Image (cartoon, rainbow, N blue to C red):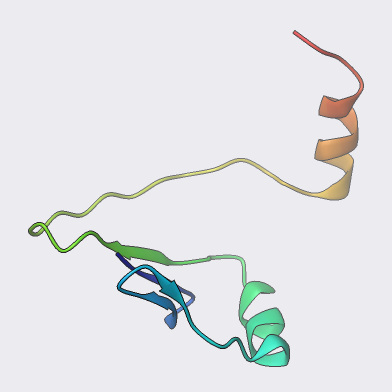
Length: 66
């Protein structure tokens, strides 16, 4: 697979690529984090909406178990 995060290619044919950490940190500070996964088996597209992942949200949800 090829994996892209914030428009930056992270893997090529399943192998990790070098990461420009300062650039990636800046890209990940955006409110929207695009993720592209190329499985090389045809075309498809999906949109995934997630919830708030702030420190407060994680703390609240870490206080109980199911």
